[in-house]
Image (cartoon, rainbow, N blue to C red; front, side):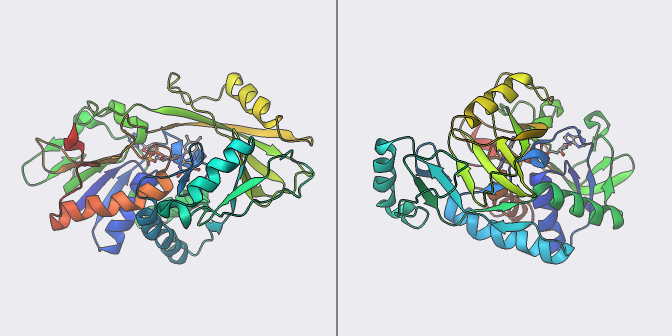
Length: 344
Ligand SMILES: Cc1cc2nc3c(=O)[nH]c(=O)nc-3n(C[C@H](O)[C@H](O)[C@H](O)COP(=O)(O)OP(=O)(O)OC[C@H]3O[C@@H](n4cnc5c(N)ncnc54)[C@H](O)[C@@H]3O)c2cc1C
């Protein structure tokens, strides 16, 4: 009998597995590569919603958990994936500058927003109304981290590269059994794939498709992430991730010409130099209507749990809610109602 089966190894699954590792629990992970959300993510962590200049939900608390969490993984796996990266918000006019300075005066935002107007020195970009700078921001190389962590758990014999078939799950009052593996608990962290999960697919997970272009530009020479109507995120070697789009209608995993044209149109409004598109990626963000995660235990089966609904902020929310779910299962701490699936 092992302690846990985990279904899905994106940011949610990885966050929960790290909790298990830190608490010496035994586990097996099923992963079938059917969803790409975490692997295509921009990787930014940023405590501010840059459309409205408001603080993201529980941003300070999440930053306190997430940054040391990723640094521990770096140390454990001997990799470098956590990078400080300034985020600059391009202002569209004087009105936005004023809104920014008003936001800087609010206690909840004063540590996150710099009250200095940053002037653009990069000739490749058109920034007539200057920038505002967000503090405490950075980038996680999510794909690299997931690949290294997968290798690590595969070497330990804990990774099963197969699709989990929900119909084959046997549920007993004290354990669950799947293909001959008995475990005390099972945690589903399937992202948008939860739509195929008969135990949890009644939860209101919506899904929002996002696409990025990866561009190469020798002339851009940008060291910060710039946010206008889209982000430009430097990846190194003259490569940049540009986007992302938001589409709540199309739930397919493939890249589209519509998204490509939309991103290019927005980019050309403020990029003045030439570039080459080297790749395009797409994934479905596991979003919810109330913008809060879906965490907790099945109402009927006490061994079945879920960690999902990380939306467009999985990097900060993942480690934070994984810790809460673990404490609920193992230490019977109560989950806050706003994240608990029982709110539905
Ligand atoms: C374009 C884009 C840009 C983004 N940028 C950012 C960003 O900059 N910062 C940020 O914080 N967040 C960002 N996000 C959001 C973030 O990526 C998500 O919140 C996060 O990926 C959700 O992680 P997850 O593990 O819940 O889902 P997923 O990453 O979808 O992981 C679920 C995993 O479960 C597996 N799976 C599903 N069903 C099964 C099954 N039956 N059997 C076996 N395996 C299964 C899938 O293959 C997948 O690996 C972005 C998302 C997108 C799409």
